[in-house]
Length: 413
Image (tube, rainbow, N blue to C red; front, side):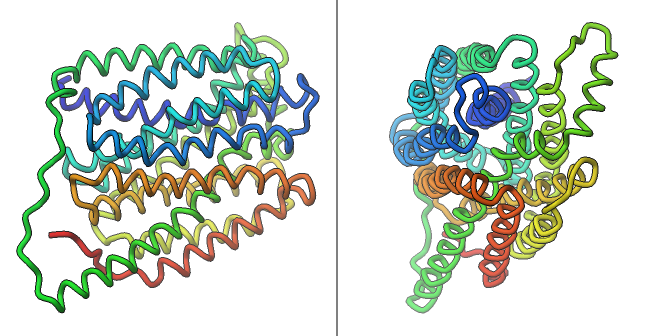
């Protein structure tokens, strides 16, 4: 494997780990801690909120540092820092302690998106497919959080779910440092693109278009983040409540496999969530291909329509039918992820790209954090069926907003 491919692979592994670390607690809270610590599931969600606020707020300084210091250097800080703090989280003895630990995990997790995506969109061509492939790795991290955590709960305890990924991330950090060491100090801010001065009418039109698209990007970023967080964070709990029949059958099958033991309910729920996440993540490859061919407007409208339909179908469903419909709305939730990144990559100038991504992810992950109190409040008062109706309304907002996108994005060339 040449250095270029190794670099892209490590960036993809980083995206995988970023989402895995931020969702380990979701499965731990849904399957173990509400019993072990005698704290309600809705209450536990409030202790995860600071971590997602850190995930958003620290994206901006992470992008700023990357543009002015070193993007590769920041990636090394990400791998090693998040690994160490994940291991530290395993020692938590109370909800307050784990909340503080998750906040520090969120600080390091905030590094990846503004830095890693800036590298991906600037270094390689075929931006849509590169972002989509990188996004699939991130979604597999989401999926693996449920699978790996569920397995480790059954076979090693919930603390091990934080320890093993932590050591793996530290190892990846030293590998990244070894492969990219020469470029860490050599990297400088890219030269600003030289452009001819536009005519006053064209310049005004460009600025008008840019403001319009930027407003849509940040609005849809916020709303789609609520959808993504609500589905990915709550899905293990949704499956725990609604797929007991499927999970029981799967657990029986698993217990017939040599070497498996009894009490594999958490593993079964984790496997079902992993399967839905992993299959749905492939939607990003299709979306990435279509972005390069037909542009973001039509693709975004199709994705939003898929979400509206399947969210409205989900209330009241259980077992096999619920599993199929959940796959449908997760296809939409995952499919929407690369679209805003694609638009920013096309519109933002190179020397400030990481900073612009930082602003985008401050918006995104602040919305992620605010989603947790929403999930907790709706779940405690009305249950998940009401949440699905709320998410269908959110998808309708996205559809309305993207319907006024221009056919071609304004670019700085």
